[in-house]
Image (cartoon, rainbow, N blue to C red; front, side):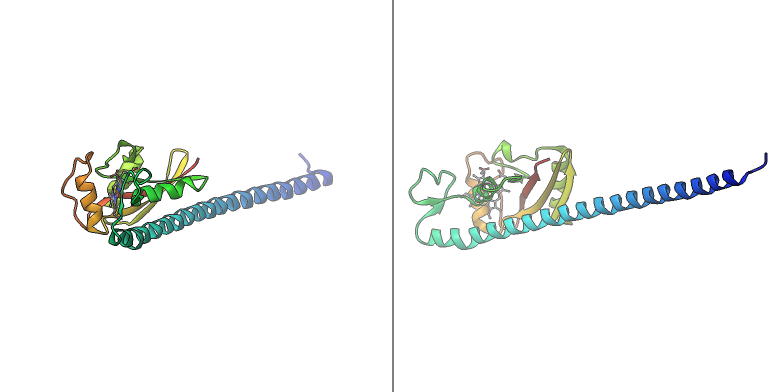
Length: 191
Ligand code: HEC
């Protein structure tokens, strides 16, 4: 078959169009990939910043506020609302911070928790808790179903952490000591 001039033009135009469309598609898809990567990075960094801030607030609460309160004859108590001379526990302080903020949940998970509500809620949370317990990492972030989560290792930074847990009526473990890995502060972003 003889290729006529209009046909040649048509073939030329078509190949230019195909190249343009394919090029645009390629650019779009690589842009999407880069964006997804960036978004993931941002969420990861954001989760870590929040965890680090909450952890710092909890440390200050335990080491400065509770210490001072104790020196003046008061104490940290689970029933602090009903008691006249008591302030909230470090764990309650973390949860209370979370109640003030919308969009994510702040809580604690434990290896030997005092309450069932502080057990890891999914197999992935359980796996991440043992990863933190191994001591290789201090903080992990991960996708878990529809939620993005972060966990920061929680150690008995003072003997009072260990003492109170050892004496609690619900405890199944009575030999906590200063420095032990007790669990993690967890942030669960709403899906
Ligand atoms: C005066 C008692 C007391 C002190 C001090 C205390 N805790 Fe707790 N802790 C509790 C109670 C009670 C809970 C459960 C509270 C809740 O979930 O509402 C808890 C919860 C936790 C949890 C979640 C798992 C679980 O056991 O239920 C972790 C982890 C934890 N505490 C670590 C610590 C660390 C680390 C410190 C020291 C910085 C500390 N605790 C100090 C009483 C105490």
